[in-house]
Amino acid sequence: MRRLESYVVAGGRQMRCGYTTGTCAAAAARAAAELLLGGERVPAVSVSTPAGQDVLVDVEASEAGPTWATCAVRKDAGDDPDVTDGVLVYARVERCDEPGVHIDGGEGVGRVTRAGLDQPPGCAAINSVPRAMIEREATEAARSHAYGGGLAIEVSIPQGVALAQRTFNPRLGIEGGISVLGTEGIVRPMSERALVETIRLELGVLRQEGVRDVLVVPGNYGRAFARDALGMCVDSCVSCSNYVGETIDEAVRLGFGSLLLVGHLGKLAKVAGGVMNTHSRIADCRMEVLAAHAALAGASAQTIARVMDAATTDAAVDELAGSGLLEPAMDSLMERLHGHLRTRAAGELCIEAVVFSQARGVLGTTKGADALLQRHVCRKGERE
Image (tube, rainbow, N blue to C red; front, side):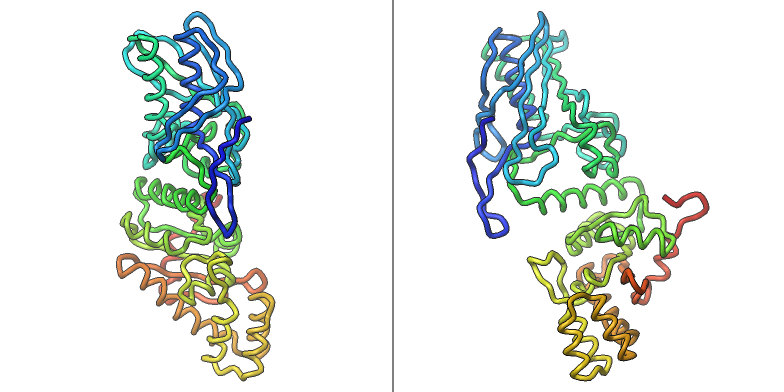
């Protein structure tokens, strides 16, 4: 398979770019249209991407009948950790009586069931930019062969049904497969961009459905704790990963009324230090924050030193508990956490937090958290 030899520096190292499922679909559609209208199988096709970069993509499978042709292109994600890397993306092109290019999804391409996404409910999850790329490639093929009729194009990704369970699609209301995506046509191996976009999509879907009070967790630990320990309904909660600040920004932009953040001390101690991207390569001030609040609670120099030297936040909590300072230190930390959250929300959002550890359960809550928590408690029959 031909590889895209284009590179970016991400995370301090050189990483190879790839091309999106949208580029694959456009390339497969171009190859199938050339086969249908020109009668020749092409070994590779060149596709212009919205990033301004042309990519030459191998065609791995071709099949044709009197009124149709199908071709496949293999996805190359480069060094990005993309679950679709290596899958075959097919496009079937048929002549049709209706003028223009008509695009739909087949096997393994998801279908939208909820409002607020790029495509309306009922449509195949082929986003606007890939649709435009597919249409352009098919139109150029038709022009080069002096064909004036219509073309119906069906994109399919047979492995997509299984792969969808490893993506956010089921949570977004995209059923039956994966999405055909790509705003630039090129995959740049910086997965945080895709994660932030997914957070925005999830928030957008909830707001479109009329949700005003959103529950946010950093990940699976927070989700499980909110459900099992706090009795909260988590079927509509949003996972923010490390992107606390950008999640708050988007919640404000969309006009949510409140946001309740439930997270482990290991994440939210950083936020209490003003860090709004909690990835370890951005910052790790957990022990410094805990030591500072231990000092504010009256800890001795020896206790502060032991907190600073603790290997984990759980070990630091044990030190505070052993000195009888856990409660005042957590009260101090929660006040600071609340201040940073409110500053980021700029007064446009009621925002509160619950901080926990696996060993000790709830360690602290901001002063308005209990009231928001009640809005998310499961009623009978609601628990996931």
